[in-house]
Image 1 (tube, one colour):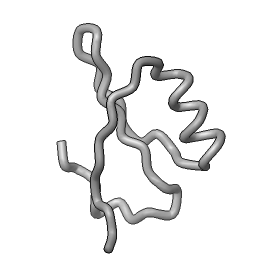
Image 2 (image 1 turned 180 degrees about the vertical axis):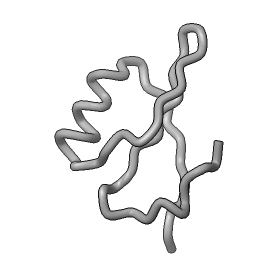
Image 3 (image 1 turned 45 degrees about the vertical axis):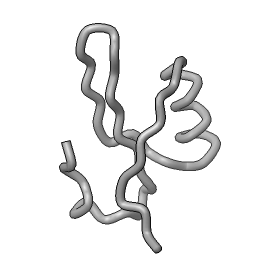
Length: 55
């Protein structure tokens, strides 16, 4: 089974990005900020770009 998309809510964007990007090696590919909320897309550096664009 492959996951194409999942979502988690976080309280500290910078701390979470540090964990996922610096700790696990993922990369941030998109960020949308509306009012006081942010939506971020992070993925493996080797993942194909064809699975993006879900939002």
